[in-house]
Amino acid sequence: MKHRYLIVAIAMLVVALGLSAAHAMPEEQAPQVWVARVDGVIDPPLATFLTKTMARAAEANAVALIIELDTPGGLDSSMRQIIQGELAAPIPVVIYVWPEGARSASAGVYIMMGADVAAMAPKTNLGAAQPVSLGGEMDEEMKKKVVNDAAAYMRGLAQGSGRNADWAEQAVRESVSLTAEEALAQNVIDFVAADRSSLLAQMDGFTTKAKGLELRTAGAEVV
Image (tube, rainbow, N blue to C red):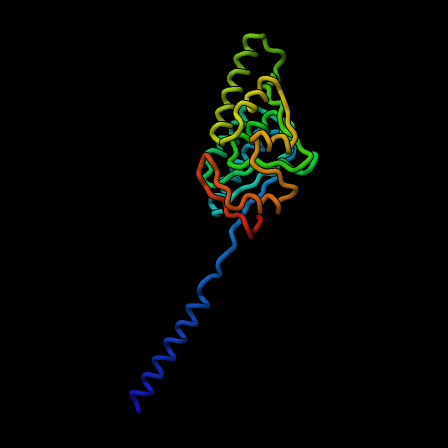
């Protein structure tokens, strides 16, 4: 009889420990997609903010960082700082031109070509990426050097991301522009999405070319 009571007591203890362990296990969290908003000129404070946000999103194990963009362009040095952050980020960086009526011009085009994913909302546009001097007119020889350098940089970014490098170079040399639908048809961007929910749904399962990362954005929590 004593042995029977002992077996029952041990069994109850095992069950109690199992229940305690089950309660102690944390619930599985939904994947996180971080979102940052850019509305205005590309300048040093913005470049610092975005590069720090990329690092923080990676530390938080976010599945992606979406940068919602509306910009007329900005400084070359700030643009390059942002692009270096994009290329170095261990998570996918998504540039999304939004909302309707927004644009990604000049420096914004370079930033899009350096992104892991490039997307636009309907009724947006991108282009006109020829360099402009802020210090007055350049002579023809200097202008040629600057444009050639910018064109090579843009072409390299587009090729690395698997996008239309010919158009990207043309945007620098001839300041051409595209609507969202034209950009998608010409393989300049990856998606046209009316809103963030649509973008998350379309990106799910997409594999980035440069980093080979597969996005899992279905059901993600937006931060």
